[in-house]
Image 1: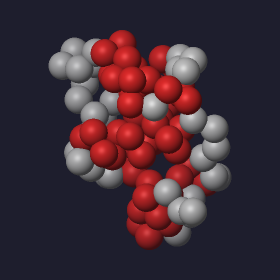
Image 2: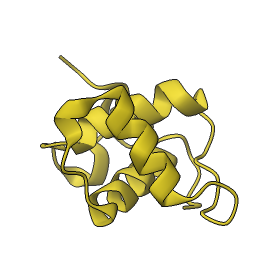
Image 3: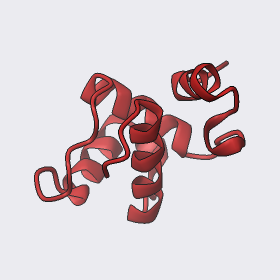
Length: 88
């Protein structure tokens, strides 16, 4: 199975996202972010709190529990980078 974020990275840069395969919860979080934000950047925390986003993602996929904010921030950064947007 190839995650869309990795596919985009391979196509645009010729390497996997961040130069390595993404493992753990991040691929799941990235897939949920793609579905939720329709390949648009995740809004800045001032406009969409990370606690709210975390709660919504946990509601969508209970296997992510526990989900710490550092993991969520890292996945958001990877997702935004994969769609060509460096904003967090």
